[in-house]
Length: 153
Image (cartoon, rainbow, N blue to C red; front, side, top):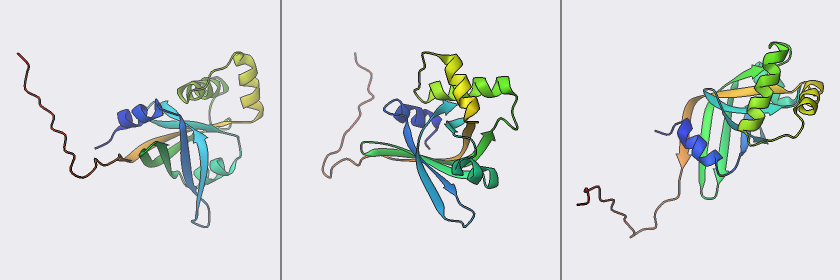
């Protein structure tokens, strides 16, 4: 059964993912995001009051899919949403920085970064997995690899 370690392995290749949330109509909205592992889930940030934030505030169920070459991994779960309205400013600043770095970001001027994310009222999202599944390439027919675990002498 796949775990967050499998997610981490794919994220080492690239940090881009497709996040799918539910609109009020029940239809799906998908968007490209940068993600990283944070705490017990897959994390991202979004501009405050975005469609993603509104959808997740209404219904925390979401899916994030990371794809690299012929391999993809999907995390289904519930999002924990942290906003400037429900989180202390110092905690929010640290959380946004940590998730930005976890998603592969770097910054030369953290004071400017902090001012911009505050002005944008960026929200932090941590998707806690309920189900993780992976699709890896199949071996071509006729090719069978035998792994010998016999100790060498």
